[in-house]
Length: 376
Image 1: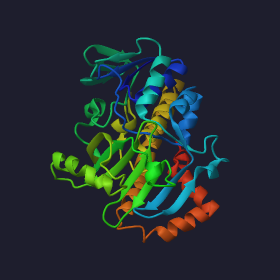
Image 2: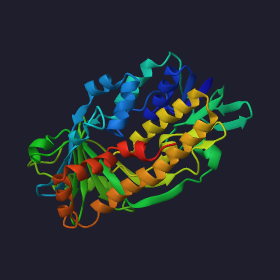
Image 3: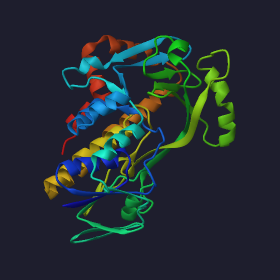
Image 4: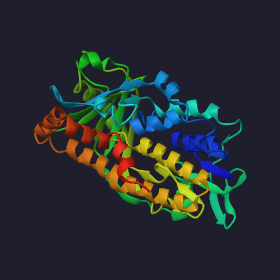
């Protein structure tokens, strides 16, 4: 069996390694000349850790990442409203924690485990053609396979070959501005966890730690010039915590945020996974994780040679994206922008104090429930 994978990000390379381990002949087409270096996603949830452990790459990820057993809801300028501890999931997963690690570190772990020459750099997908015998992919060169998995990101050429510009969903009114810093936020905000959601009547924010930096995510007006927002970032950061001088900022990212799901994750011999199939806001860290789940489950179905299983798996993954990931991440956004902690403080404190309710909440926020509740 010959499978072509478009995209050498964490989703594409996870699909490729899964297929390779199951005996498929895999070729990965990557538009860039090398693996991407951008930080992008940085949270790995327990089900993803389980899948990566089965692939034999979890130890290497743990060696480069930060184990994060807890996350917090906080009041900006105040204390902790509630802290949730993933150790409550010890009976549900061997990995009752998150791992904070940039996705670019995972791709560099995965790449050497594939046979030399598997990843073909500088091969941007231009067109996809199908017939009864398989799929032809036109890039810089022409490739032929039994299946194609499109994992080539939010602007997927594979998805466009199937549906044109159609990508159902919406765009958020705010942009997200992320500043990465090597400031010691644990000292500036005592007791802070590795992942924190801060309520504020005027300006909510998210603060999370990666091995290399702390990141601060701030909502930003949709239509102001980029240079204006970047220029006022230093003052906004001083409003988060004041070290008595301007923050050291390593890099910034300003981007629009969307919630969208492709019409179908399977058309003939072509499958979609990750951002090529669905995109969502980053609140909750579900985008890359759901993409990894797509990759592993679709790759297993393809390798098994069961056409009905491929169809059922693609349909199930779309239900997860639409009914689980989209609803959860949008709910997180609505809660944070609701005008401060007052509406939710009591609810969150009660949740943290009730182990049964907290476990149920953590099963959903950790994405364990997405694999249990929505099956093929």
